[in-house]
Image 1: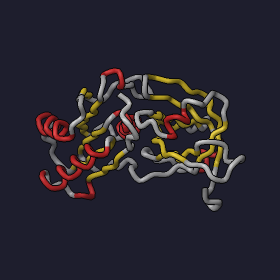
Image 2: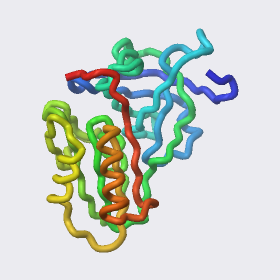
Image 3: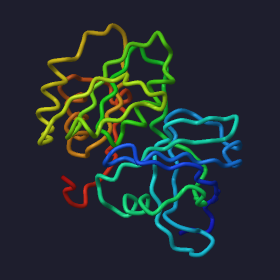
Length: 233
């Protein structure tokens, strides 16, 4: 861990498992008042106590919601990858101190478009929920959330299910692409597409939108959200 990186700390005030593969964390920190929050920010959290070691790994998690009055951030941590972050979250308890870098991000909200495509899997669901809740109410949205199992789907922070969900198993990028082509509406104006989640699907959809649909690459916000270590199904 580099010593010139600014490290903040907060308290885990609540943690609960909301389905087989997802944990919901609520983190409180007075340090959050220092940030100029933008929906789409991520929180880079260290997997351990920064005061006891100088060589800790970290993982980036999307901010699902920010409550500025009490300085509370919500994150949803998925365990599909079975990596170090997935194992670490299972050891946490309410009251633990968490260490992190100041929140920031590149996949932030952009209200400049007329319509939006919000596409992703369960690992990107909290990020897309946060973007969707903070779009202007006059914006049109086409959503496509793909899941291996219906039980993997969890509601937004307010308990709503604002997106359209599709169970696709086994996950084949070409199948996802075909379903999106069959379902997508015709929107007038300019659009922005957030394409997040499983790496192979993200790459396939990014290339499809860029080359086949001839979208301006500046309007494509694409990012793989996880790397599978081994199958968890």
